[in-house]
Picture 1 (cartoon, rainbow, N blue to C red):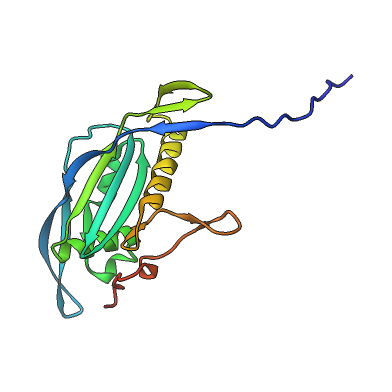
Picture 2 (cartoon, rainbow, N blue to C red; picture 1 turned 60 degrees about the vertical axis):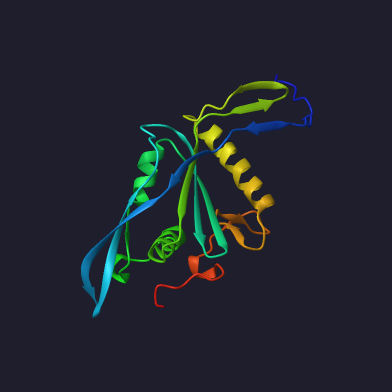
Length: 191
């Protein structure tokens, strides 16, 4: 005899995420004259990320300023310092392959003397069903829900001069990926 199945009950779920961004400061570029590529000088840029993260898990927010525009990217990582090392060396030659849109924006802003800022969040609270607990940033599920909440908040606060660069959902619920060249006032590498 098979067990009797009860009808599925729809139960509402309420959740609240709370954390504070810690301003780590302005990213410091180190420019290196590296040689010539196709007859013109090019530079390599090495970055010094402000703050001391050690092996902390959590969220990071990179804010790239370019004149009157701001681009915001929010990411999550099990080791923030290791993730930021992905952006450690920004090359300006096209022979390095197609750079990510974030890398292009960071590089362009720094070459133009514009600021790039870093903020992190490594602690927070989550309330589900009236029960408050610590956000366990070492657990991917906790980081993902905190990242989604942060992206939604930034999108709700954005004005016509601010763009949140995280992936967007299309009408079918699939992630759309835009390139840096689809963003307003972003130079393509050919320019």
